[in-house]
Image (tube, rainbow, N blue to C red; front, side, top):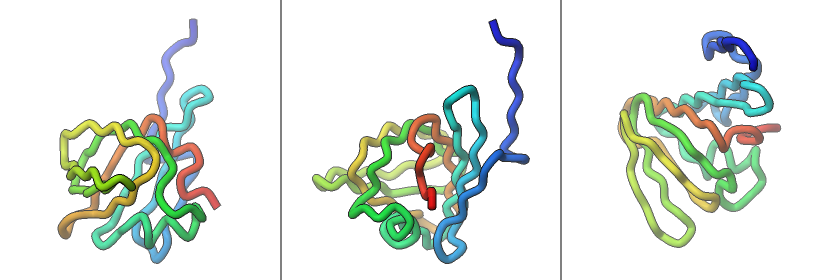
Length: 120
C-alpha cells in the first residue's frame, strides 16, 4: 500500500492558460490521474477562450467536479442547461458550452475532464 500523498495547487505540475488571459488550468498528478483546478475569469466562455485551443465545436470533455467560488452556466448541445455555484458538485457529459456568470472568477476542481483540456 502506498503512503500518504500530498500535492498542492500552489505549486502545480502544469499550468495551461486560456485565450486572452481569461483564466488558467492548474494540474497536479495523483498517480496516473491528473486533477485540475481551473480559474475562469469574468467574461470567460468556452466557445471563445478554449474552443480555439480544442478545435472542436463544443467541449468534448466529461467533467466531474466541485465549484469552489463563482458561478458558471453550462448549456448542453441538446439544449439542457444548468447554473452551478459554490458548493455545487457537477457531472457534465461531453457536448456543451459554458461561461462565467457575474463579476467574480469561477474556481472549479475537476477529477475527470482536465487531462487534455486546453492542451496546446
